[in-house]
Image 1 (cartoon, rainbow, N blue to C red):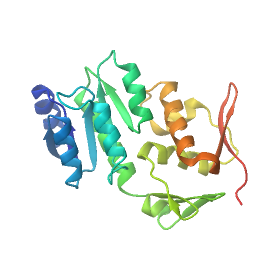
Image 2 (spheres, helix red, strand yellow; image 1 turned 180 degrees about the vertical axis):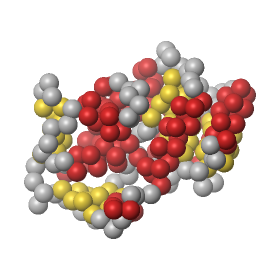
Image 3 (cartoon, one colour; image 1 turned 180 degrees about the horizontal axis):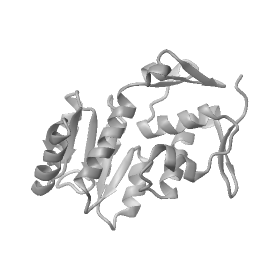
Image 4 (spheres, rainbow, N blue to C red; image 1 turned 45 degrees about the vertical axis):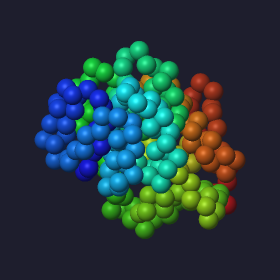
Length: 226
């Protein structure tokens, strides 16, 4: 995979870049927000690792611009400082797929980058050609696309995976713990992360899909298939 590593810290670029390359990825370094946007616009990036603190554009602004551009579905992993929880949650609300808090383990980031790339890059063999529908919402697994009627909805990889879980078990109540286990099997996320991604998914699908809260238990996909 081609990883865009966005951080102005030379040590992060050197150490993390080395680990990513050892994992078989090609790495492009970007030390500013402007360079990050240019790298994404050039195409060919499979995953972006984005630090929130950059010398020119704020990392959240870089994220916002990527999500509103032609590469809106690019998987993005945020690098955040320990005291940046509000920004971290805002980043998830803007469409980041995952985050790691500094100081971090390069090995952990490599694992997370690999998972994001695999989820985004290809469907499982048994999914190829399959279409899952609920109401006017259709998920075309082989093309990694979601439609409402004939209109394509741009989801982040995490939002796509979250929707896939609900579509695979309609009307079943899913706890936050079950969702975390499915999407973040290492367990390094809080309940707030699930809530932020779920709120974003609900906002994008509007009234087309009813994901109900079951107080004290979790969430379920309600409504009718037809």
